[in-house]
Structures are given as structure tokens and as C-alpha cells.
Length: 223
Figure (cartoon, helix red, strand yellow):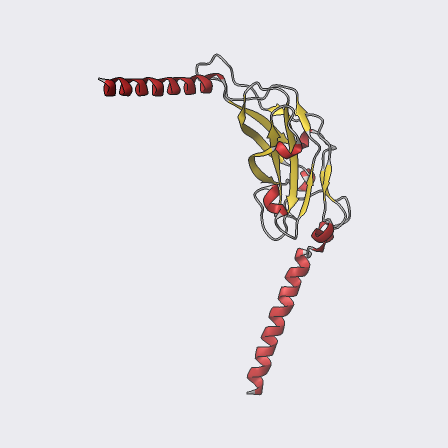
């Protein structure tokens, strides 16, 4: 009898958990943010001192010229400090041409903040790991040759967007914009400034190959 009661209690507890899950999902879909730095024409991300391959100081980061450059959105609930922010969404490449220096990542879901949430704290972090494509700011910093940079903290006072609730009681809403964005720079500082220029590295490799071939040719003639 006790065993049967225990089984019934477990089933009832499981049912309540499932019911609670669907209620939470129904009322609180994941919030979304529009990750788009081009909303403000002055929020250009540029290279600065210590970037020999970036061209003259102040050049916008061009995704075609620098395919290893990336940017990502970090977020947290209201009142979060920079150290408490976490990566949301994926790192995205920079635009190029007339949109060089901008990142257009589209809608990013924030799994731990519901649709309609206000005063989320976000920060844009950018980097160029030069020798490889880093998937996060932290991974990029693990490399000796990296050019990192980050924006100030932004407070999103408007409600986060989202897909709406399953039962339709909460309608879909467009992703919240990051207002008040400003430009910032990514720079090689300290040991980071020792990064080789990609074109110079490639040229050096070609010289080594040619020298090796010439040496082999000379040995063959000597035989």
C-alpha cells in the first residue's frame, strides 16, 4: 500500500513539475536583443595603436580584410557588473565595404531573461586573434597575438523582445535595440603589440619555400 502511495506521489510531483515548466514557458519566452552596431553611425569599431596590420590608426575593422576579427554580445540582469556578464549568442564577423567597422548580428536570444524584461545590462566585446578565429572574447585573450576591445556597459531600458507566449496571451515583440551606442577601438597592448602582419608572415613563408627549392636545385646540379 505504501509503495503504491509513494508511486502516486512521485507521479503527482512529476505532473506538477511538467505543469510548472509549461506555465513558465508560456508566460516567459526568452527575451531578444537586436545586436546591431550600425544603428548609430558614430559607433564604429576601429583599430588603434599597436596594430601594424590594421593600417593607419583609426581604420574601421573590415571583415573582408580581417576575417579573424569578431564581436559578440555579453549580457546580464539589471545591476550587473562587467565581470558578471556572460556571452549570449554567437560571435559574428565584421561587415565590410561601406559598413566596415560595424557588426550586424541580428536578433540574439537571452536564455536567462524573459520577454518584456527591462533594464538588462549589455556590453559589446570585439577582438582579432589574427592567427585563428576565436569563438569568444575569453578564448581570444588566451592567445599572445590578439587585439581586444570592448564598449561601455549599456542599460536597455526598453522591454526585451521575444516570440510571445504559446497561448497567444503575450504577443510577439521585436528585439530590443541597444540605444546610445558609441564607437570603441581594438588595440594591441603590451605583448599583444608583437603580432606579425599577416602579409609579412605570408611573404616570409614564400621566401623560405623559394630558398628551399633553390637549395635542392643547386644540390641536384652539383651531383
